[in-house]
Length: 319
Ligand code: CP
Figure (cartoon, helix red, strand yellow):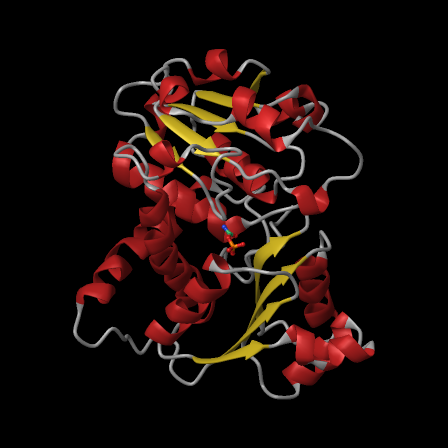
């Protein structure tokens, strides 16, 4: 069956998830992103690839990095960008998501970049556009509930390839709140597709989804064991806003057992890199000495995110 994100020519129509996205498409996006990193060095940081296109950023949930880097990426591609202010929009008066979409389509939108607390909201929009004969409009998922955060997953892949080159030689640990993390799901989908032979998820039992081993990962409930000898440590934030019930002890106790300190990082390879999608909770999942240390690539992740988002948007709607 054809991947619903690809059109009949095998080109990207929407970016909704990394699950099932072919390896050659992922590699194609990473390769396409590489030259865009140089645009930031130019005096005029602009390319005409999306000139005349209207891109609507629809963030129904808070964001700093994703919203801003999508806006910068779209502007560097010369698109016209509209940031819908959800709190002052008619959503606050009860307008439905799809009515909002229909009205923005009437303003000749070419692309929607959507973040939503409900898993599946971007898929719903893509299906609605197709059902109403507007499948020339593209949808990019900027993070939906616990489901997926595909551009975060892609910028993470770009970062790993930049520092470590060959995915097929790596040991990688994803550490923290796997249960509530859309980032972890996108990372696991991409890393397994790219052939990482030793992919570990490291978390307390209460923050591990059932049957996660079926996704091709090894589980560790002892952080020290999980970090031993890895090339890449991918930390995750505790997603308190998505937790129901008491899954954890106090933040201080979590830090003591699950916080990435210099002493725990020393169990990884000496040249291991430390990643985090942000926002950071210093003193809870990560110690400041690690977050700001020499092995941290957390801020380069953000910078690479602009090039990766430029690649995705230009592949979807570029001239
Ligand atoms: N990584 C990430 O999604 O960060 P924001 O919530 O700030 O966009």
